[in-house]
Length: 272
Length: 285
Image 1: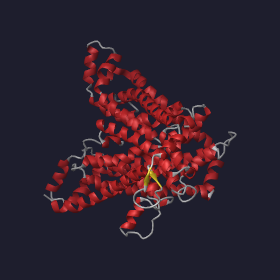
Image 2 (image 1 turned 180 degrees about the vertical axis):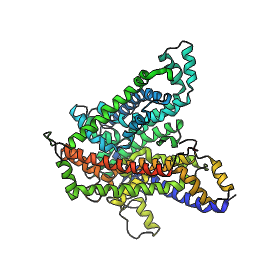
Image 3 (image 1 turned 90 degrees about the vertical axis):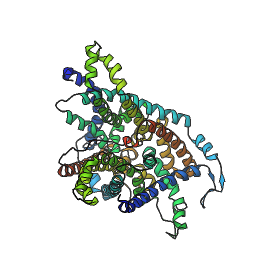
Image 4 (image 1 turned 30 degrees about the horizontal axis):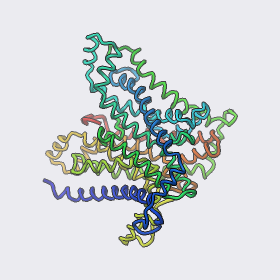
C-alpha cells in the first residue's frame, strides 16, 4: 500500500537493530572466544585454543558452591515472594477499598528507589543483626524488589478469574482454604508460573543488593564475576571471561526456559 | 468480594506489608537517622555538609546526572520510533525481541565485563572499525565516560523498547485508521493520536529506565574511571559506607540519591498528567 513511505523507515529500523544486535553478539562472542584463547593479543581470531582458563577459574573459585548459592538464593527468593505476594495480589485484585491507591504506590516504592540507595542502609541493618554475609541475608535482601514486582504481575491474572467461581465453590460448602487451593491457585497457575520464572531470572542477575549484603560464602555467581573483573590486574582476563561464560550459560538456560512460558514484553514492567 | 470484610483483606495484605516495613521502610528510616547523626548518635548536619561542601564529593551528583540523563534520553528517543514501527508486528519479531531480552537477562556486570574485551584497544570493534577505515587508530571506548554511556545504552535500550512496544501495540488500530480516513498524514496521526496515547508508557519507561541508569554502579566501576569522571553517587556512597566505614556520610549520600531521583520522577509524572488527561482508550497498558 504505502510501500514507498515504509521503505526508508524500514531500512533505518533494520540498521539500528543490526548495529545493536551486532554489538551484543560481538560482546558475547569475544567473551566466549577469549575464555578459550591463548596468546590472543591481536588479529580477529586467537592463534591457539585452550581450556586452561577454566581450570584456573575452578582453582580460583569454589564453583559448585557458587552455583549452589545462586540457585538456593533464586529459588528461596521466589518461594518466599510468592507466598507473601499472592495473598496481597489477591486482596488487591479482588477488592476495592479506601487507601488502595496509596497502598499500591507504597508497593511501587521499592521498584522506584534505586537499589543502591536503600541497599546501603539495608546492608548496615543486616550487619547489625548479623544477617549480612549469610545466605539467608542475601535471600531477604533480594525479596524486597521481587515482592512488589510479583504483586503487580499477579494482580491482572487474579482479576481475570471470575469471582462467581469462588461464590459457587462457597455455596457448595467449600472452606476458604479449599477455595484458595482448589479454585484460585489452579486458575492462576499461568500467572504464578510467569511470576516465578521471572523472579528466578531477575534474582540470578540481581547485582547491587547481593553485592552489598553477601560475604565470602554467600556470593552468587554474578558477584563473583564482578569481583573478578574488578581485580582484573591480579588474574588473567581470560579467566575472568571463563567465569563470564559460566554465568552466561546459566542465565541463558534460564532465559530459554522462561521464554517457553512468557513473552519478552512480559519480562519488563508494565504499570498503569 | 464485599462479603469478605475488612479483616480478611487486612489478613491477606499483612505479610507483604510487614515484610516491606521490616526490610524496606525500616532500613530506609535507619539510613535517614544515620545520615542526621554522628557516629556517637548525636544529631548533626555535618554528614550532608561534608558531602556538599567537598567539590570532589558533590561533583558526583553532576556526574550521575551527566551519565543517566543522556543515557535515558537516548534510549527513550530510539525506542519511540522503533516501537512505533513495530506496532503491528513484523516478520522476525520473535528473533528481534529475543536478542533484545538477552542483555536485560545477562545484566550489567556481564555486559560491562564483555565490553572490556570487545571494545578494548585490540578488541573486535576497533579491529572492525579500522578494517573499514572508519578510524585510523583504536578508539578508546573503555575506562572513560563513553564506555559507561555505551554500556547503559546497551543495557537500557531493550527495556525501554519492550515497555513501549507493550503500550503502542495495545493502542486500538481503528484509531489510526479513523485518523487517516479523516485526512491526517502519517506524521500527523503519530503526533496527534499515537504519541499522546503513548505518553503514559513513555513516562513510565522514562522513570524505570532513569532509575536503572541513575543507580549505575557496576558499569561505572568496571568501564569508567571510578576515581574521577565517572565517580557517580552510588560509588561515592559505597566508598563512604564500606571502604571508609563511615556509615553516616554513606547514608547521607544514599538519602540524597533517593531524594534527587524521587524529585525527577515526580516531575516526569506531573508532566505526564498534564499531557495525558486520562482518556483510557488504550486496551491494555
